Image (cartoon, rainbow, N blue to C red):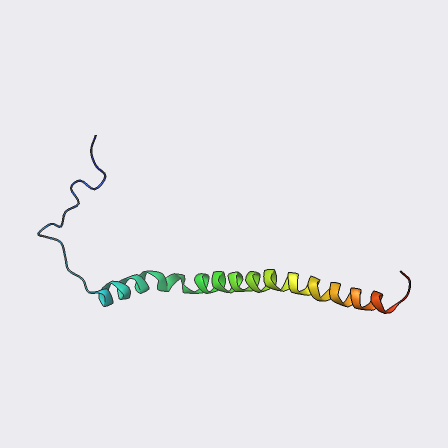
Length: 75
């Protein structure tokens, strides 16, 4: 039974890239998809704010409802 990492040693012909070169290359690959990625990021932010806002809205509504009912002597 072989090991997963067998044969993955550094070879003599491996190229050496700086981090800056690699980041530029990766950004170049993603540039055509920038509008789609921006839309996805905006959707994620929107749903995050919405999911955060719903419990706050419910809490404030319940606090208001309790405050109104506590001033009346219907209980």
